[in-house]
Amino acid sequence: CPINKMQLLEVVNAYLNGRRPNVSPHSVCMECKSAGKVCVMVAKGTPCLGPMTHAGCGALCPGYQRGCYGCFGPKEEANAESLSGWFQDRFGMTDPEIVRTFRGFNAYAEPFRKESEAHDD
Image (cartoon, rainbow, N blue to C red; front, side, top):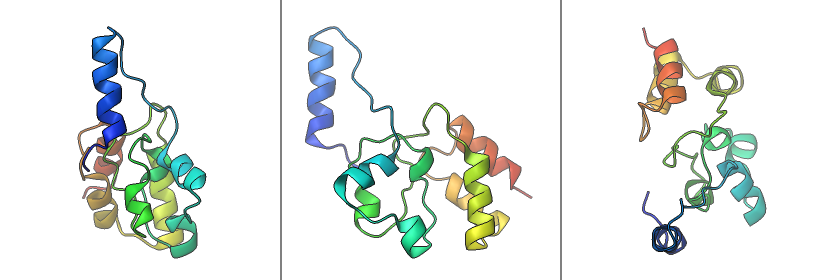
């Protein structure tokens, strides 16, 4: 996902002021809610990594009726096991489908990696 103008300005501002950039502590789900977007997982049954992904993208993918791909990486306390359980129980996803979901842009980030390995045959 491309960065947006506000993200770039925050990084430049932080660098010029000798501080770390502010990183949103909440998930993509909060961005969806604050923008008035319908939850694609609940309303459409679309698998989405938004519940365990750092906010910052403006919920770009859910805004186009797609699930979040996890571009901004996992939150500090991401519960991948619970989310993959939801994928299996609610959506009937198979282990290979779950592996593909977690092996996207941040496949080697610990929560994504561990959960994909747990479903890898």
